[in-house]
Structures are given as C-alpha cells and as structure tokens.
Length: 591
Image 1 (spheres, one colour):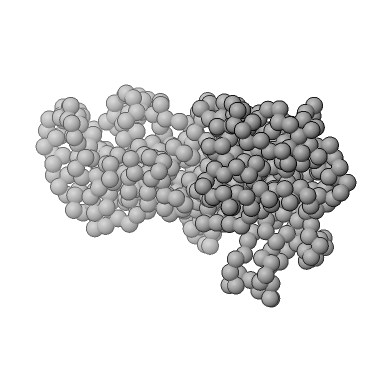
Image 2: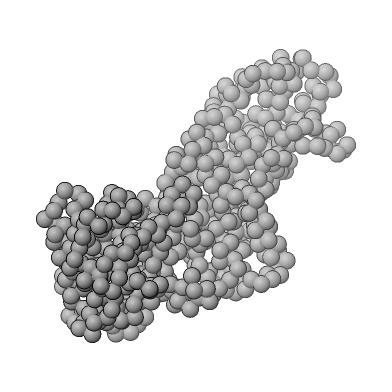
C-alpha cells in the first residue's frame, strides 16, 4: 500500500505543470553537482565552473538530472559521466593512489562500455579527448580547484555551447535507460504494479531521514538468512520482488518528499514525517503547518481547517480527496515505518479538530490557542529542551491524532507530563493540556468495549464544579489551600506548592492532614468575610471526598494536576456578580 501510493505520487509529479517540480524519468536521478568541467569539442578544459550559491550560511550546489548512480559499497564502482573528483580525474585526495587509479579506470571503462553509436556523440568524444590529455597543472590554475580538491567533490562535464551536461545529451540518456536492466535479472510479478518485470535486487537509498546514515538507508532490503526464504539467498531483492521501474519510482518520490526544503515534510521527534495527496490540492503543502511551531502561519491555517470542519464549506479543497501521512524512523542501515495513515481530507480535518478540542483548556492571555506539537513535547521534557524529548513520543502522539478520537494517546505522554509537574512543582498550561487530552482520550477508549456502561465524565476546558472525582477534588483543595496562604502572607517567596506538591499529588494522606491544620492559622489573618468565603469553598470542594487516599496512581496524579490547574485559573478569572458572591476569587492576569 505504501509503495503503491508513493509510485502513484511519482507518476503525478512526472507530469507536474511546473517543469522545476517534475521528477526525473526512470533511469535518471536528481543530483547536486557542485562543479562542472566546461570543455571544448577538442577536449580542452575551458573552465572549472562552481555551481554553488550561498543560501543562508551554506553554499548549495545546483541540482541536475543525471543517469542513475551506482549504489556504492566498499568496492570500486563508477557512475556514468559524473562522479567524485577521484573517479573523474584520477587525482588522489586521501593518500590512496592505487585505489584512485582503479576508480579512474572504472570511470573510463563505464564510458567505453557505451554502445558504439553513443560513443560517436560529440559530447562523449570531447570527454574522451579530455581524459586522454588530462592536464592536472591546468586544473590547479583554476580558482575553484582548491575547494573541489578539498572535498573530493562531485563533478561532471559540459560541452562548449551546450546548456545541458554531456550526461544529459539524448544519446547518453537513451543509452543509460537501455542498460539499466541486466540480462540475467530474474522475472517476477511486481508487488507494486502486479506486472511481470525484471526484479530490482538493491533498491536506491532513501536520504533525508533524521538520524539515519548520511549515505542513505533502505526500506526494502535483506542481508541475513533469517530474512530470506525459499532458496532466494543470492539476490536479496527476490524475497520482496519489486520491478526496477517501481523501485525507482517509489525511492525517487520519497527522496523528493524528504528533501531539505520540502514543504511536505516535518520532523516529529525521531519520526521524519512526509505527507501527500492523491491529486494536486492546496492543503498538500499546508498540512505540516498545523503541527509546526510557527504562530504567524499555523494559527490562520488551523482556524481555516477547523472552520471548514465545523461549517462543512471546504472552498477549493476537495474533502473526499485521500491524503497519505508516513512517519519514518532510523534503524541502523534501514528505515522503519513508524506510522502510516491514508484518510480523506474531511476525516483528517475532523481528527485534527478533535485533537485541538481535547487540548482545549482555559488559558492565560499569552498562551497559544492552538499549541504546536513541538511546544507540547518540549513542555514535558527535562529543562524544556528538545534533546530531552523521549525518542518515540512525538511519532506516537501524531499516530494517535491521525488514528481518530477513540485511539488513546501514548501513556508516556501522561507519564512525562506528571513527572515534570512533580519535579518542578509547576502545572503550566501546556502540561495541563497534555494531561487533559490524554485522560479524555483514555476515557473514550475505555468505554468502547462496554458501550452500555456509563463512561467516566470527560474533563471540561474550565473548572467543573460537578466533577466528583476524588483526585480532581484534591487538586482543587490544594489550590485553595495555597490561595489561602498567599492571601494571608502576601509576598511569599515560596508557597506550599514548592514544598508539598509532589507528596500531595502522590500520597495525599501524608500531607493534607498537616495542610488543613496549618490553614487555620492562615485564615485567622484574613477578614471575617474572606474567611467565611474560603470556609464555604473548602466545604464545597471536600464535600464528595470520603477519605484521603494513601496513594494516587499515575492517571489520578494527572487528575490531581488538572484539578489544581482549573482551580488556580478560576481564581484569576473575572467573575459575574452572582458567581463572585459564591467564590473567593480575585481579578487579575492568569496564574
């Protein structure tokens, strides 16, 4: 399914109306070529041209369509009319002259193996003459030579008067296509197309997956007898027969989606995530902005998507168009599929809308209405650093978002959020939102096997006076006790939260008896009216609580944190006259 979808995307991009966005035909690939050897028809060097341009702080080489490269191993294997400086010119850059001589010989042999008619092409003859009369001293006089030599850069040839490279000349391209299939390649039914075709033994490397080998990794590969069967041990690709054309199509499409400047990729934890549609669609390049930490761009796009979901008016977007979302993670020399979803745009919009509904929470004026996934993950990481985000967490959260509203978020998310609340004695907006989202999803999921049973009530975005859950009530109680202390002793550098939050949220019985005794001393410092209001609030909060539990399990520690957050926010929320008479709150900025 995944490879078929990528192959279909490749075919669509081959016919893209924008020539710059078209993917190369079978037998070719897009390659950065930093240096071009401009030569005359007689094989004389005219210029060593540097194609790199400064983009930001880095020099980026121009991309050319060239004959498909050989998959490099520890042996010597040359590409057709393009390769590294050592292969092309036979100049040693690493102190291995014998190996460089072999590489240059292989490069020339690849050209000599072209059909006779192709070798009569003017470009091929010019390259042959240049290689015959190689003049290293002339090369050393070129301004770009030092940079090319230092990096053993990739280079190719261009004939004087041509716009294209020699390897792009029609005769060369045709010859490259005609020699891509070996005579002894086994025939089998392609798992992607269903047609009888020569099987690709080694698939092209996938590059751009964060954390994978820089030289590329593979989705389809076999290298041990445990992964091979039915005697197919000599040619690895036979175990998952995919035709050469289909293998080229899916690898080219995936490398395009994973490109450095691709608007159709995003990094979610260790999962490099790409997304595409069955047909051209405006949302195809917008999807990533919904999750990215870009307030100026993402807020408008999230609101547009949510408005379309709620109103049913999708504008230029096709709500029935199917979207593919693929998450890839590194696994040594291979790539593992972290998650894959194929849903219509309407389903996708509804699931994203439900995600933000689950996160919806009363907030301060400076908190984001639609918190990005990046901020949600860093909020539960040690020191709020991206390097400390648990490796699998980001991918697991996205997987749950795209799977639907009844699929629970990973328990690791709740664990990390509760742990940071206890370690830092702070329940902030992002951590509380993560806890609320996890608990609501979990309650929906738990209700699925027994729909006849009344599910636990989902948590509201704001303070819920009707929620009688003991852990939620204890969180509210802790916030009330802290508020009493703050009003009794203004200007305190530390409150009961700094000393007791961790113990109160995990072992309530060991803490609350002491805190309730201490609050009496604090209440004596307040006016009779404030004391009465707080006593009334304490009675309302403690009413459904029969006893203080000895221990709260992890989900209840999350409910405690949410109750504390809700009550604290309620203290700083402007009240109407009726509600102000029932609750001892004060107006002001969000805590």
